Amino acid sequence: MKKSSTVTTIVFLAFALGAVIEASKLPFGRMSAPQPGFFPIVLSALLAIISVLVLVEVVKGREEASVAREQMSWKRIGLALGALFAYAFLFEVLGYLVTTFLFVTFLLRVVDRKGWGMAIAVAFSASFVSYVLFGLLLHTPLPAGLLPI
Image (cartoon, rainbow, N blue to C red; front, side, top):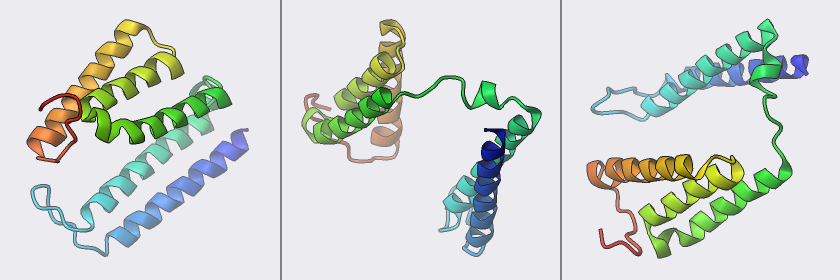
């Protein structure tokens, strides 16, 4: 398994470096006025950094601790995919805040098996902070649904 993880990590690193090279041909801009190359360069640079960090872990022999910490079951994958489809269908009906709260709660409680307190606290925080960021600060139109916001 160590060989396959090493090869996969090197492939991701090569992909990230290629993306950085190609994206550097586009105008970068600056933080306050990003140009078309801004996000591709930033994202591919992050992918390269993460690939290097994973490669170091694999080479050191910590692959078992980092990669195979917990086996993902097909049931949990199916539950997560079902939750995504339900989120997509209920998004307009229930609204952004309610649907996001229910989605994150379901993922944490059912799929990740966290306690109710943590699931509700994280779900509330995630839906509230993302609403403030996207709905209020960035003025992204989000469906209100059940809540008159």
